[in-house]
Structure formats: C-alpha cells, structure tokens
Length: 582
Image (cartoon, rainbow, N blue to C red; front, side, top):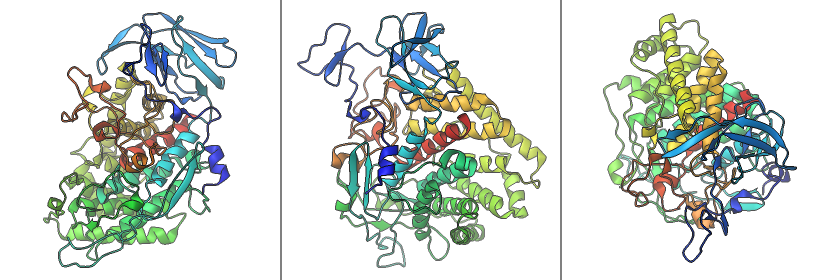
C-alpha cells in the first residue's frame, strides 16, 4: 500500500474533481432544462463562458483565459470573499477556426498574489475556481509519473489516489514465447517495462522514445523539477523517483536484445485483450523478430541512459553502454540490411516505421556519451539535411538527435552546423509561439495537427520550446509551454482537463483496460484528444470542427486512448515549467 505521505501529497484540499460527471452539450432524455441552460452532472446550469487552466497558474508566469461572450471587460475575484482583485479589458473578438468559436482573451498576468480565484464576465457564469500557487505543478507532475507506475507490467500494484485504491496482482509473469522467432524455441524472460497504451502490449520503438523523455527531463531539469516529487509507494530512495521509474523500462528493454545485438520489436498476444485487469490476461504472448528501427532506437536510448545515470548508478550505466555498443555494432556492420519484424503475425498496430531517424538518433546519443570524433563527423554530414519539426512523435526521432546535438557543450562541433541547428530550433519554437498567441485557446500547433494523439503532440511541443529556452533564454518560449499546459488542463473548447484525476472534469472513461475493468479512471493519464483524421470513428459527424473531435467514451480509442509516449511528453512539459517558471 502507498504511504500516508504520498496519499496526503496527491490529494487536493477540496472535493475530488473526478466525481464530477461528463460535461454534456445537451440534456439527457427526459430531462428538461430551462431555456439557455444545459445539463452538467445532475444539474441544469448556464453554459460555461470562461475557459482556463483548471489547475491554475504560477505567480510570475502568463495567465490567460478564453471568453465566449460579447462583452468588453472582465474581473478576477477572490474565491473566499468575492472581492474584486483585478479588472481588465478583453481582447477584440476573433474566430478560432479549430473550433468555430468566436472568442476574446482575458489576460491577468499582472495578478501574482497566491490564492484561489474565479474570472467573471458581466453577470454570466464565472469560471472554474483556480489557484495561483508557486508549487502549482508538483501534484500534476507526481500524478503523471504515477500514470507510468500504474502501467508497470510483471508486478503487483497497489496505491491510493484521492482516497481511492488502485491495484492488481502481478501480471504477465510468463513473458513470452519465442515461437515466432526463427531458430528460437521455448520462452524467454520479457518481464518488467510499461504496458504501452490502453492494451497490454510492449513495444521497443515507442518504449525507447518514451523513456528518452523521462531521461531528458531529469538531464535538463534535475532537482529543480523533481527534488520533492514522490510517486512510488513505499519508495526506498536510491535513484531519484523519475529515474527509478525509467529504470523499470530500461530493465525490460535490456531483455529485448538478442545475442547478436539485434532487438525484438515487441511483446504482445496475437489479438487485443478484452477489458480485463492485466493479471486476468491469460493469453499467450510472443516475442517478435528484430527490426532495424527497434535495434537503432534501443541503441540510442541505452546510450542516453548510460550518460544520464552514470553519476548515480555506475553499474547500470555500464550495462546500458555495453548494450548500446552491441546494437550499434550490428547496425554498423550490416549497413545495407533492413530488418523488418514479422508484423504479419499481428493484425493491428505494430509501431512499424522507417529507421533512418532512429539510426541518426543512435549515432548522436553514442557520440554525446562517448565523444567519438568519427561519429561526430558522420552526424554533422547528415544533420544539415534535417530541420526541427514542430509536430512529431515516435515515428520520427530526428528532433531528439537535433536537440542532443544542439545542447551539447562539445567544442569539437562544427561552428557552421551548430549555428544552423540552433537556428532551426529557434525557428520551430518561434512558430509555436506565434501559433499559441493567435489561437483562441492558446494551442501552439495549426489546425491540421488534430490527428491521433494530438494532446501528446501539444505536450511534446514543449520540448521544442524548452530547448529553445535553454539556447536563447527568451521567456516567450516558457510562456508558450505554459499555454500548452493551459490547453491540456482545461483551456480548451470542452472546458475539461485532459489528464485523468487532475484538474476539473477530467476524463472519466479512457480507453484503458484497467480503468474499464475497475469502472473508474486510473489517475495521471493523458488521453489522446481531438482527432478528426480517423474518419472511420463512428462518433464523428458532419460539420464537426477538428478541435471538437474528442469524446469521453471508453470504446473511442481514436480520441480517448492513453499511451506512454503522450504521458512522457506531459512529464517533460510539467518538469520544464515547474523548474524554470517559478
């Protein structure tokens, strides 16, 4: 069971917001609300007109809300005594194309006094109550890491969050059969690691990609973000908790490497599991054959892990570097061999991807860890062909290579390549800043990015902004990341947090088997978010705007599934703002 300390630190002082029911756009059948009202939970209320980060704001950072009303002024009132503490002018009305809403922006960044407040406009419904607090993001950061802890495979879990217990017995202790791997037989230990998403598969490529964000979060922000963060029940110390979480995935990834240095692409059953707890899942699970992208992303993240943990755990660092070298040696000695995993054995998603980006990432991380000058020459001859992407995910790790190179302090780097890479980083960050400032809801990415996992893309853009901030020190990059967290935590057209158990009206029905089996959402999980690109989603309807295409329904994996690559980006974004913004 979790310690009383963790329970206390993960609990809000007010009522549990997860008990609030789904925000509906119309009344339930048989319920008649007065004209101009709609049903929220069991009550008819005036529709919301003020949308903001339902967790709150840091005292010294930007504070904005989106207003859907034809008024000119707003007020901020203290929640305890209704006293007006700030008065401001709303921006001019403008159309938000993503949602089809005409909006005005309330900016109250000048208000810095800690406390609890609401934003009011005329005599309309006030905003959700929010906090201004220097320690605002500790709890969401703990919760997002707890989301990883709840995805741990191969062990018994039990923890408490907001007076609720979440638990299951040890699962998948017999991972996994080698039946589908040529010249192999029997079983092999594949235990440990995180369940990848709403199902119980485990994938090397996405696992390595997600792990990199936790490792980089510690490498970039360290104690400033994580010193007082606790998420592991009965944690005994040793590594910082974020690195202890990372180690759980590292130990699994090490088991995915074959003797020749190649790396199995995945472990999973042949079909998806029903909505049961993982310990009830008795389907046979299989190792896949190796893939080039798995081998390269494994080499990359192991080299990164070796560098990050070396000051704290020399033995783990050495194991990681040895494994990275072994996989990279195979890639170097088989430059014309493309390993393709036996994806045909599985009738659904496989995280198959081109491998050139993973190879570049592997070279860059090995150079950063070892200082190999030949690798540096190779990298610099390649980097000139690439620029930093604003939107990116597991299928293209090029940004990870560019960021590692840009943030290096090595004097051996080419001045020309350094300057070009730096300019590419800043150009991407500037585009995100501009988009956030022009968006009606502060979202820093353009309309066409409402695809699968769009919330993860929003969170991930904070790495672009954080790297730019480290290079240039411009506060606009930090504020733009604040806007992305605002969007994810309630400043969106739904007026809802997108992280289970965090903020107001969080998702109640994620596509996540433990949540479905238990009948309530496991905490700390970022759901995929609006997705207008999956046109086979039966919940989509004619005329829906891209930014509206999210549905809090367990069966809707198109928009409401969870995944470790989205949560990892959220951890990084929260760590950035928490470490630099207060």
